[in-house]
Amino acid sequence: MKITPYTFNDNYSNLKILVLSDIHYYKKSNQKYFNIILNHLNYNNYDAIYLVGDIYDNPKYLNKENKEIIKNFLQTLSQKTRCYLVFGNHDLFLNYNDGSSSLAKSFSDELHKIPNLYMDNNKTYELDKKHTVTLINPDLIPINKKNYQFLTKIPSNKINTLLCHEPEYILKLKEENLLTNFDLCICGHNHNGLTQLRILPLEKILDLLGYPHKGIIAPSKSFKLKDTKYLRGNYPINNKTIMYLNPAFTSLSKSSKLNMFNFLFYKGASLIEYKKNKK
Image 1 (tube, helix red, strand yellow):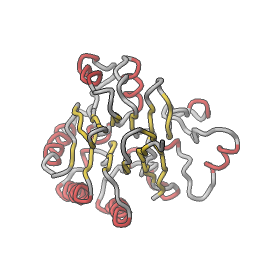
Image 2 (image 1 turned 90 degrees about the vertical axis):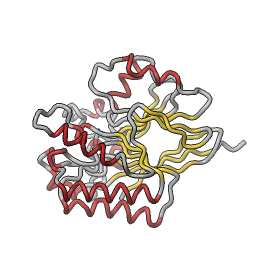
Image 3 (image 1 turned 120 degrees about the vertical axis):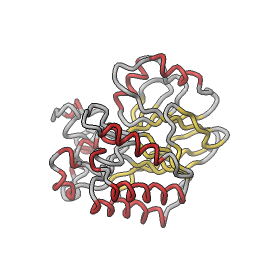
């Protein structure tokens, strides 16, 4: 598992967070993905884990066996450290009319029972006395500003982090001036820009060419490097707030119809370190 480090400097305390997103589990053999993560946690300690959506690929794959495998994975994670989870578009599939959205809601209710797994929508939790994390699962664009006024009431004298799966929602919230009290927004969804090839050093080539965004295919299916700005990494979105896009664990999902080529890519995650500034 390739860990991308990111350091956020603050004035309060040190925290070490593992960020996971876009695992896209869909069948029993994918349990090996969970085992890679759990094996990593056998040798590394974190203050918390942020799960930023698309844990599974589609609610239609939530048969009894798969539900138990996913639940056991999340239970094991939460036994190691506290976990904060937001859902992604694949977890919820709100645009489907085949009953899968009801299945996703039912499974969400089951996951709520796992101790040390925090997943209440539109809720702010304290990591410690000076750090908070807020979870949101927005419904649809355009954003209903009234539903998110609570974001403006987050105490500005703390280091505040927002978890939301899709970066486009973060940018919409920013346009509505709802993120003025947030320091860090963490999302997933964009699957790296497909440059994390294990056999071809595209990352290094793009670095040499001066393209730090490391993209090759933008979400709009554009191949232009200028269109890959919000694919992975950290980007200031206002004078105070940084948006951090987590690399996908699974670059090519089942839904993409290209998942047989996923072995060509690294399995990505992030280490976010909130580090106390040295005086």
